[in-house]
Length: 96
Image (tube, rainbow, N blue to C red; front, side, top):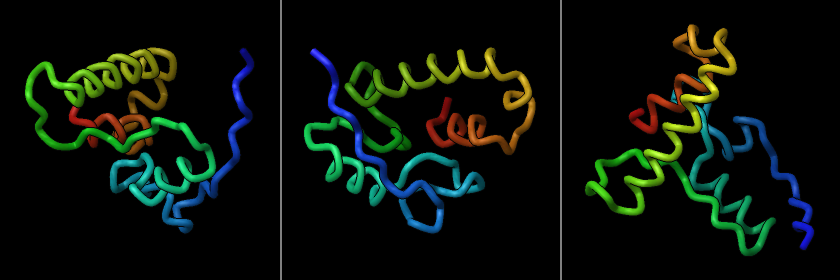
């Protein structure tokens, strides 16, 4: 079954939907709320920044994100070397 076409949301930092790179990149709560409003049924969530219990859903989400982003580090070595890249900042925010 074909997926529904996603409605775009404002992607600028000024819109308040995304964090600037220096603050760890990624979407804010406001951005996630805007995305979910534009795309009903979405399960998008914000970053796991706390200290979840081992084996919990949040811990599994973090482990999954860290594994995926590690692949991005291999694919984009230039971003992997730059400590201020969005990729590195996001990994720092997720505590990878």
